[in-house]
Image 1 (cartoon, one colour):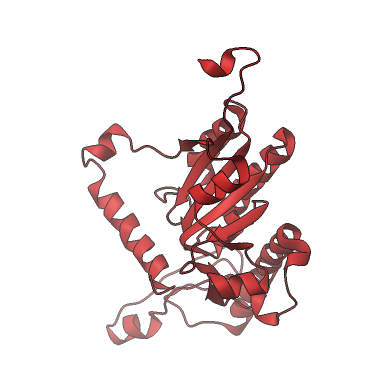
Image 2 (cartoon, one colour):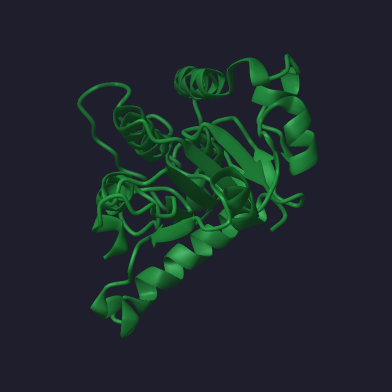
Length: 264
């Protein structure tokens, strides 16, 4: 109640939003639908002195990354609240996209940073079904409707069309990073080549501002009496009692694959 008493100085409050896991729609842990209320509360409740993002993500959907980052930046500008990002194991690809919504980015010395690129992957099974006497029957209206069908041989024109989309998406990512990091970035051509690094190299490239852990850094910035107000997703009743075991297991497998790309 002390903070409501006139003329009584209250300690600074920093809202902490934890963003952990892969980014995507549906069952994935991080997406705009799951986080928009959390982010709104963090910025609007109790007039925080700042918002801290605690990030541990190997990436995922560029659209969901963009929507969340835009929401954070929009509220930060509207409420005139500084945002600080702190990386745990990894902020790569879409995870780094989220980090770039902050005014500054800090990481553990062993954190993995970067992977500023776009990837599309699948499989080709046309030889397999042919060897097993399986006939693929596809009927479309529109000659490109079945492009990149994994059960048909890959067509050069389909690959060229996909590559153009990936290049455009990559440029959106590059523009976001350049807008966020500005003159902090070096002109090293590796930055936007999809490579990733540990924190010290990332700092030298301008991708982060330095190495620091959240609580000591926030005390340095806002004083030893700073209060951290934590926000994050809560598991629903059915999830807690194992009603979504199969779905959670699939999410865990896909997340594990995402982290494994960075040796984690």
